[in-house]
Image (tube, rainbow, N blue to C red; front, side):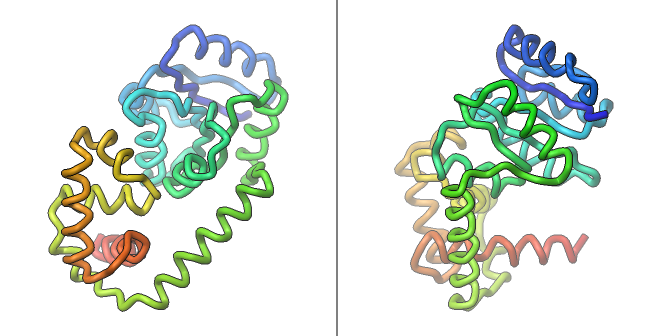
Length: 222
């Protein structure tokens, strides 16, 4: 049985989705949530296999859920629904740890296909998105080999600069970072400038190459 938590900011839509899913013999909806805080609280007491979360949650709630769930000891799989057909948007969620995505125009039948695929450890990805993912991975690998990484430089960053660097790694634009952190674009530019200077790199991509090394160091310390 595939146990699912449905997260959508509109209770009516959440109920409709839940009703459709509950009609399937191999799927059961454990509960519903209307924001990221409620969803994460439910996950502490109601373990499930899949979190079905709407990309339209306010204040980047879907991304927050994806990032937090990815850090859990036994994380459920996150399936993001209602995404626009945008490579950047999809890559952003995949980089954060989402196991799959469903575009805005997808039918109910296709949604069920995605749920079962994610449950089986698979992902339904269009050819152009698959190509974009491969290019992204290849680019990061190339940058990592060409850049002299010094993880200790990361310790010089302020907590806010680290937040900005994380978002840079998820391919956020300056405007998106400003919206996410509720700060001015000019402030973001200053943070980016400081990050590049402290890490002794010349581009955002080179700065993002630090993230895997920093996370590895953090995991070793734990």
